[in-house]
Amino acid sequence: MSRTLIALLREGLPAEAVLTDPDVTSAYSHDMASFCEAGTPAVVVLPRTVEQVQHVMRTATELRVPVVPQGARTGLSGAANAGEGWVVLSLVKMDRILEISPVDRIAVVEPGVVNAVLSRAVGEHGLYYPPDPSSWEMCTIGGNIGTASGGLCCVKYGVTAEYVLGLDVVLADGRLMSTGRRTAKGVAGYDLTRLFVGSEGSLGIVVRAVLALRPKPPQQLVLAAEFASTKAACDAVCKIMEGGHVPSLLELMDRTTVKAVNALAHMGLPETTEALLLAAFDTPDPVSDLAAVGALCEAAGATQVVPAEDAAESELLLQARRLSLTALEAVKGTTMIDDVCVPRSKLAEMLDGVERVAEKYGLTIGVCAHAGDGNTHPTVCFDAADPDEARRARDSFDEIMALGLELGGTITGEHGVGVLKKEWLAREIGPVGVEMQRAVKAAFDPHSLLNPGKLF
View 1: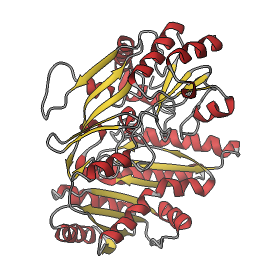
View 2 (view 1 turned 180 degrees about the vertical axis):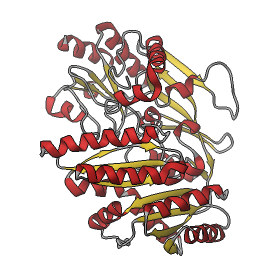
View 3 (view 1 turned 90 degrees about the vertical axis):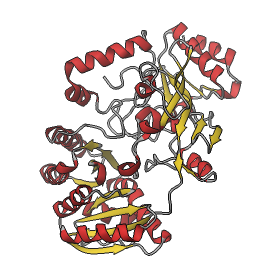
View 4 (view 1 turned 120 degrees about the vertical axis):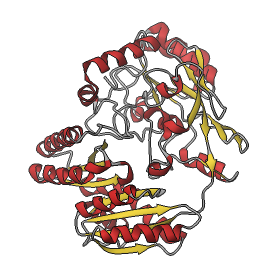
């Protein structure tokens, strides 16, 4: 079967686009998530054109071989993991920005375009693509669409789903379908574009995307506020949002995360604080906005409020936040990164609960959060070589997700379900929800060849 598969793939792909060396293909077997099963793919293909993607899917359908679409493999839920004998369809070579239109305020891109590359390109036209995951220097637009990713600026600008206007998608049988629009408005038929966003490659292969852009905002300024408790920091978040303020970001780092960032990057962040809150504004008068938010932080119990004096100082603070997950991984060598989103009003209860879980299991668990969205990232640090510690890490991860659901939240705000959270998706949406999701999957992929075993 494997020889037939590879021979057929090579009929429609250049020789260099078909990788079979096990030492090479093994590197494509999984993303960055822990505790997620992965198998050795039979082959890795790197198409450069839509027609080549169609050829791959027609071949896979003919031979009934599963296919997993991949971007940069920066995902954190196992959604990009291969199964034994599968085809890995890596889209990183389809990396062209096809169009940037300042009038229509759209960009048309292939799925392998890196988020940061797109952001810089549209910036040259005075435009802005807001979604900015922490991995924005590496992650691809196709991966962002597949996982419906978010980022630091979601509190003001929203998530990826709000910027995807239209898609070209290769279906499981190789047919090409277009969804959505490139106009500012459009409500023709079911919103299939939104259906594909967050589908983790289980419904089709995105080969082109029409993305909405915004005018480039002024340079943002950042404020850092120190708190003697996470509860006080969360109270400040509630006061800021209740007061009608619209920060461009509102991020929280707990004491464990601050210490980890200092240990990794020697940034001199205040380790005596229990929680560090970062607020930013990209308004015409950010100084006044920061002053108003600073006053609310002080009223909530901030021990110190320090507004950045310029863009360089602001970027330094943001770099500290972006380093959080990398820094926590360095604590023990391995992390499980949770992605629980709760109502903002429940944020303090979520963080207090995580602290109890850490004490119960004797583990280091740092929390960084998109506080303005209630999207927390409790990060369990553990030694993967210690079976008992690894078991406790997995148990603590599950307990944190259960806590999120108890507080009226969701098991994932931006990382997706993948392999890691299949059981928890079923708990969140219930049996009827699972049944309907499976029905949608069957309509698009009747032979279950696209990323099977993910989501549910």
